[in-house]
Image (cartoon, rainbow, N blue to C red; front, side, top):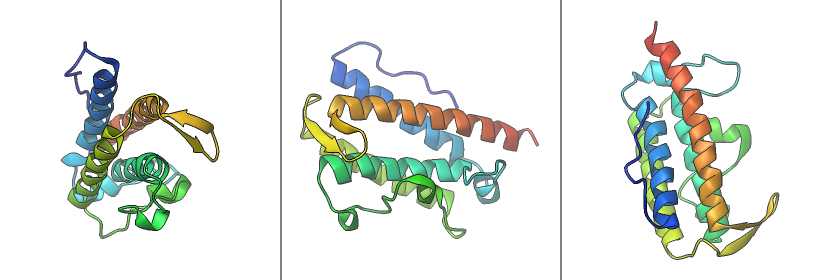
Length: 161
C-alpha cells in the first residue's frame, strides 16, 4: 500500500524519522486487513509472507536499536533478535494482530532509544563496522521500503485471486 509522506520539509532528523515511520506504516498496512490464512500464505520458496515481513522488521529494529544502540544483551531484547532466515519465522498460532502489535511495540521502543542520541553518535556493528544513528535510519528506511515492495507484490497476488 502506498502511504504518502506526511512531512516533506524540516530538519534532517525529523525528515528521517518521518520517512522511517512512513515505511513502517506501509509495511504493516499491507498485512493489516488480510485474513489469517492469506497473511501466512507462502507464494515464494522462501519464508517471505505478508506477516513474516512484519515479523522480520521487528527483529531488524531490535538488532539495530535495542541490541546495538542501547547495548542490550539479546536476552534483554523485547522479543526475537536473531537475524537471517530465523527473523522471518512466524508460528502458526501467531495472528496478524499479534505480530502487528509486537512490531508497533518494538517500533515505539526504537523511537524511545533513538531519542537519547544524536544523528552523529556512533557504534561499532560487528559486521559492517562503525555506524551512526543517521546510517541506521537510512539503512532501515531502505530495508523497510524494499520489504514493503515485496509485500506489495505478495498482497497483489493474494487479493487478485
